[in-house]
Length: 388
Image (tube, rainbow, N blue to C red; front, side, top):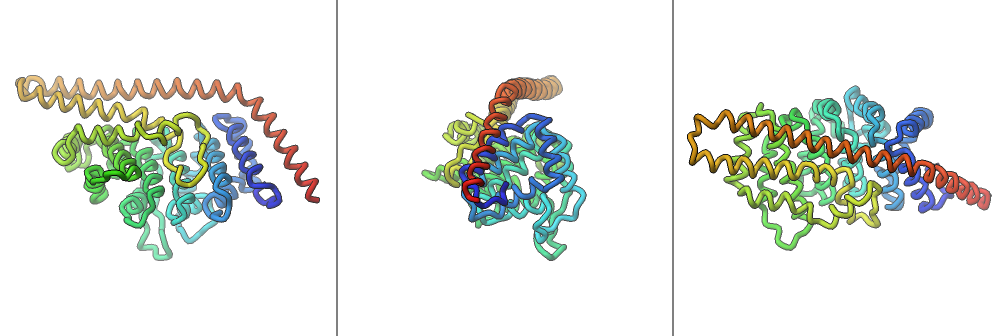
């Protein structure tokens, strides 16, 4: 359908949105798209238009992003295929034809729509699956023709984040991808901490003065989330950045109250409130590209756990100055560990309930979307007939 240039872009964008609604969380429809993809490279066509289609309309590119998000939603088979492509190939940004190359090209692009959309897709590929997060940790990408410049995707992401020429929207997308990667994956946290200057960079961003700059304030909030996730899912394999060391850094270099204030900024943003309303991307212009529904829910789930952990440990530290530390240390460690695990179990239970409610809603809406697709197909046929 993307090759039919006679179809108005608004009709095409709406059709793609409806297809996205129709396949979201529906394994049968996702499998049908898998079959169609193997026959005609549908996903590659969509990705190419989203990544390389600077001349295409913004609504069309965003509708493609939404459709791809819906394809990946609860679709471990589809995600697994993409992760396997990442893991099985020696990637090179010079090759523009494989699905993973298109994603990396978009991620590195100076076009903010391509960069942001690609970062969001990368986050959706690994979301909710520790195995996928770990699988892509060691994959190397040659970012130019010189093979000695090969870097991991984590290193590429950090380079993009720290590059002063990276756009605001690129940095937002990178932080969304990194935070999704770090959540519930201690090995990803370990890898992140092992890369030089990552923590110092996050601290410098959080502490930077940004009076009147709403965009930089959002960056600070996301950097606070990334640092908090390093605290929450730390396996203590990097001794210089153990849980205790990070808590001390936050307290001494940032101040716990200021850190929590910066972390909470995102929850007060209009972009956050809008993103939480619906999975469908309601973006009218490129400046609206900040958050999506999936990440907003992830932030909502984890922000409280980070705050709770810091607050509890801060109180425990104060108490230890008044109580014999030798007699209480072991009990406090056991209690702290138990409370963290209980928090995670509660969060997972809440997420499961959300998924169940969404699944019920999707089932109820399935018939309606099927009829809408039929109506749109009829409209397209009428348009084609008129043009013949």
